[in-house]
Image (tube, rainbow, N blue to C red; front, top):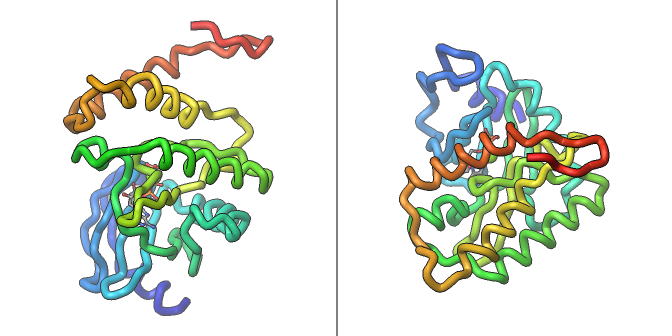
Length: 212
Ligand SMILES: Nc1ncnc2c1ncn2[C@@H]1O[C@H](COP(=O)(O)OP(=O)(O)OP(=O)(O)O)[C@@H](O)[C@H]1O
Ligand SMILES: [Mg+2]
């Protein structure tokens, strides 16, 4: 634990608290991903990842750690090895995010989709409310397995339809013969942008009916 603390202290960010620049980090780390709240590093010569939150989101580390503990029997999520001040250490998951799969033309199958459904049903059975399930939080491993990361919002009250919407898009569009299995990054970003805009203009009616 002390070692992880030392490593985390050597990671330096500057600029905005919500979207900082990474200015320095130890040579024992490899940057493998940047999200909206954290940098993810692989610890070299190990199968572990250190997720270090941006200054404005440091408090999320404790929340995400609690949720990983609730999910410890759900094999679709990585094991958590340590949690400290603004950081987490978990299993490294080899493979590709669904975002990368779409960009690189790696096939996504019914089997993967069914596994994601199972993973989320397992989380719901533990009393969680799976939320923020987007293409960069789902990985396909080299042996074709599914893993999910980033459950920080699984204890929120609000119902999140992101996975239902992705599942529907898979059935309605992706599975169609003529749908391109390889989609340029800019188009994926545009779709994500339009999706978020549409969602933010969606008004929730009291009767639970959604008005557009
Ligand atoms: N355990 C892991 N194994 C492999 N890759 C990982 C792991 N954790 C994070 N990553 C990579 O780093 C990226 C960012 O990590 P993560 O999703 O945890 O950050 P975040 O800021 O919480 O993301 P979001 O923008 O979804 O809120 C992921 O999309 C993924 O590509
Ligand atoms: Mg993420």
